[in-house]
Amino acid sequence: MTTERLDILSGDYQNSIKRAADILKSDGIVAVPTETVYGLAASAFSDAAILKVFEAKGRPQDNPLIVHISDMDMLKGVADDIPDIAFVCAKKFWPGPFTMVLKKSGAVADSVSPGLETVAVRMPLEKSIRDIIDCAGLPLAAPSANISGCPSPTTYTHVLNDLDGKIDAVVLGNDCKIGVESTVVSLCTDKPRLLRPGAVTLEQLKAVLPDIEVDKAILSEPENGKKVASPGMKYKHYAPKTDTFLVEGNSEKYAEFVNGRENAVAVCFAEDKPFLKVKTLVYGSANDQSALAKNVFSALRQVDQLKATAVYIHAPEKTGVGLAVYNRLIRAAAFKVISL
Figure 1 (tube, one colour):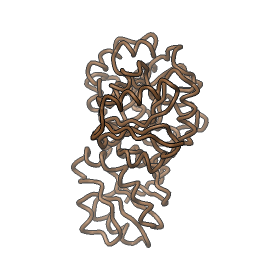
Figure 2 (cartoon, rainbow, N blue to C red):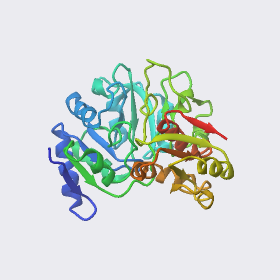
Figure 3 (spheres, one colour):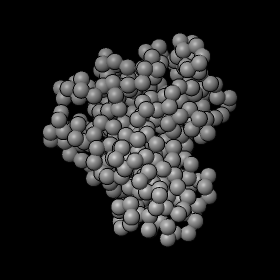
Figure 4 (spheres, rainbow, N blue to C red):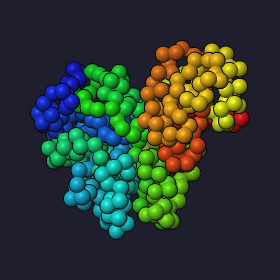
């Protein structure tokens, strides 16, 4: 398969949008930019198209997908019995990096969330994907556009490195502004439940959902065999091939520990670098959580190039957007955490 390049930056925007939409209407799959990470999109109404997504990624088929919409009318086509609080959340957080788990409409393909009566839905902030959705007239189911388990893609180059020749097309757009996947909240539980943290923080959610609960799987492994309503909960994710550890502690203790490891790489804060004697990949300042989120997956993608025995990632604070970064890193490390 030849992967078509659809350039919306220096090429013809409208023709590229239309071409992407035509491929999607014909049950093809297209990698598209969003404000969070690049997504691999397929019609949310087509099991045949969604099967291609799972096959291209090597993704377990019990891992649910998020459906992307472009307006509130489309929400009513993918979800049933929508509670009033969902419209309050939509007014506050949409378009943006926020996903709601709702009761699934019968129109949505079973493979979007197999074995579940729910569907995860969001309205992205990135204009180009909303334009593609409008042009296609279809909601799009889209996980991250990468090989399953590897670091998520935040540039079209990342997508091509993983999926060139395996998908119909990739939209050549800007780098993703946020860098981690959307916040996911279930509105199908007794109380609203945070399933995956993202750029819409727990602190922001509490202003709208004061009784929100935090799923314990955010910081720990879910129970074996348990069905999950959100992607990013069940499996090891975001990981380089190099043996990966998450390290908690201040800069002094972190540097002392990592300097004592043989053939190690440090994925670290800018504040750590002066104290480190090993190979380093800086993913931002400890005091700039947005930068950590934007850079974390790019740093993880560079780790294997350094051919180290192990990588030790300095853990961020578990507050604000830092909680989202920590959530991704603990999965990249397969829950191997070293507390100093």
